[in-house]
Amino acid sequence: MSRQKDSPSGELQIYLEQHPDTQLLELLQPDMLGILRGKRVVRDEFAKPFGSGLNFCGATVLLDAKGQTFERIDNGGRDGDPDVISTAVPGSLVPVPWAQVPTAQVLLAMAGADGKPFFADPRQVLRNAARPLQDMGLTAVAATELEFYLLEPEGDRPMPKVGRIPGTRRLQDGPQYGSMEDVEDVDPFLAELYAVCKAQNIPAGATLKEFSPGQFEVNLHHVASAELACDHAVLLKRAVKAVARRHGLGASFMAKPFAESAGCSLHVHVSLVDKAGRNVFAGSGPKESFSETLRHAIGGLAAAMGESMAIFAPTANSYRRFRPGLFVPLAPNWGVNHRGVALRIPLSAPQDTRIEHRPGGADGNPYLVMAAILAGIHHGITNRCDPGPMVAPGTVIEEKAELPLRWEAALAAFEAGQILPRYLGKRYHQLYASCRREECDRFHAEITDRDYEWYLRAG
Image 1 (spheres, rainbow, N blue to C red):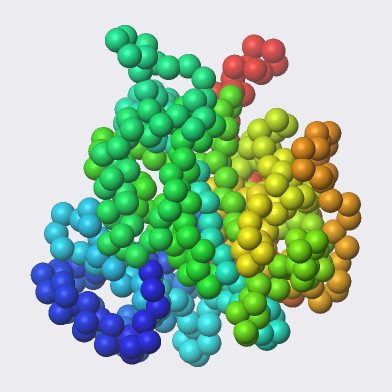
Image 2 (cartoon, rainbow, N blue to C red):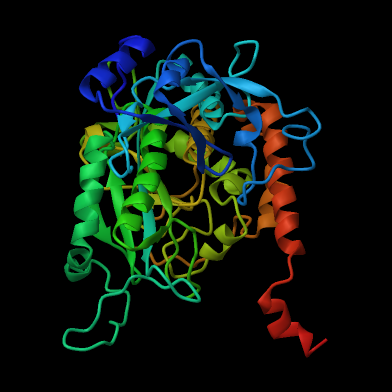
């Protein structure tokens, strides 16, 4: 999804010249969990988001996983649910290939009635967090890797889409990591997904059959804009789900849909380039594979990781993913070419030296995850944070939980955090904590089948 230099109204005009049959426009706004919410407008109203903007419910970005507002905050309830002014994000106007009638979509950015960025819009939170690095003349180059499950369309419980043993009706056993036959089994889905990504300027790269039945990963190419990388992530999730429906399948980016199978992660690759285009993470000589700047960035990410877990793992289910032996980090460790660490330096040429940030789940909001990452990097560089000893390649790690790996503990660490409020904004930091804690309490107030199975007779 390229950014165009033309005026917003010019972008719309060019698009309609190229797609004259367009009847509907979908206006998309990611909420606190990264769920795209919005509305459709007819052709007579297309111009509004590309001009002075249109009224949009400000509480749209402050909903829980069920689409409900929160009682513990004023926004969306006691404050009269005021509108904000939303405008199109330049360069995000693209077709919706799966729509029944010719339809386009565009992402939105929110501003208050005073014209200032709306503090609760995750895009604006990311812009705020990215500004300190930009003020240093540094640009984040970023990409995401997202894992998801393809699911059978019907059943009493969700079931992964699994290949059958040839010549039988029996399902194959085992994770079948890297199985090309499993990839070929979903060729029609993947072919349409890549066509949709091309139409929507989503830079989809390699596809991998992941470490569980029915689990896949799609990598996205690096771009010199952290915000744009997040746009790609949320739009890829939307495309995967839409194309899966067209092929009679379900798709989910839930962090841990199956207890005995691998969870779904959101890995973020990030490097920094200066005004001359030089990667400041690269080492200065052949014997130095990475710079002190990278070490300090990792030190800052490690220092901020505990208080950031409530963003990297935003729901109750998120924490079921953190189990030993599944390449999920349990401590803020780091190393080169080691998938057991939280902060991995992949093998690469010097100009591609980067950090792979591995704690996040696929259910996280990419904008907030990226905001927390850039906050940690800036904190580390400016305070020259020591990352501690590196985990050497091939080291067998004794996995010990050093991060808050339960929802309540993560929320407590977030609330007590001293790093993130400076980057997310104190007002948003407090709001996020209130909303996530309320959803946590709502979740634990539910009586589930497991309560009856374990405790009804025992009580």
